[in-house]
Image (cartoon, rainbow, N blue to C red; front, top):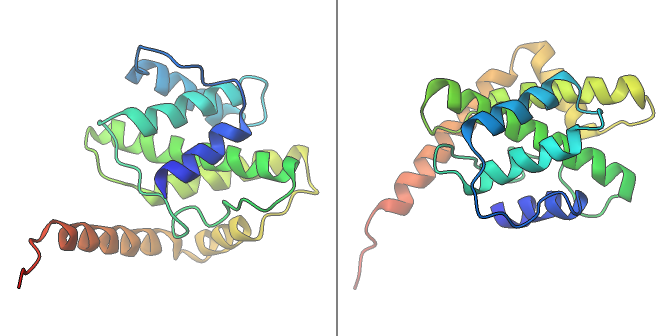
Amino acid sequence: MTCRIIGFLLIMLPGLVAAQAEPVSRREVLAAIAVLEKDVTSADALKAAAIVTRFGKESEAVLLTVGPETLPWVQADVPGPEATVRAMLMAAYFAGDIKSQLEKRRAEDDPYRGWLAVIKAYRQIRQKQPEVVIPEVEELVKKEQAGSLEQEAEELRQQQDQEEQRERRPKNVV
């Protein structure tokens, strides 16, 4: 699932991620995150999104758990312009999650910080494109306003931890 979603973003941002021998550095990804935080609609945002996505995919310093629970707005069957917006929101999610992990210096998924970054990016996009309405992100906004988003993120993280522990257990062999 991770590769499919990241692949979707890379398809949506053609030509921005060239094959490079050098991995993205911590400094480079933090600079790219700053670009996305400042204005996800800027001319530099697409390149920054590609850098953040590449870092999230390649770096062992962070752990990104992706799927419909963390990225409910990612759908392959939407029109091109909307797909691009959804891809940028995915990059904003990665940016928030990655920044949190780098600040804590611990590779531990942080969906709450990712969702907060999505909400901020969504508001920036809506200021310039008020016709853009993404129901899945609207739901995140409602949950944050109701004060339940952080708890939902914590429950999701605990569920992910439990699933990971189950996968590590040796299977009974008969």
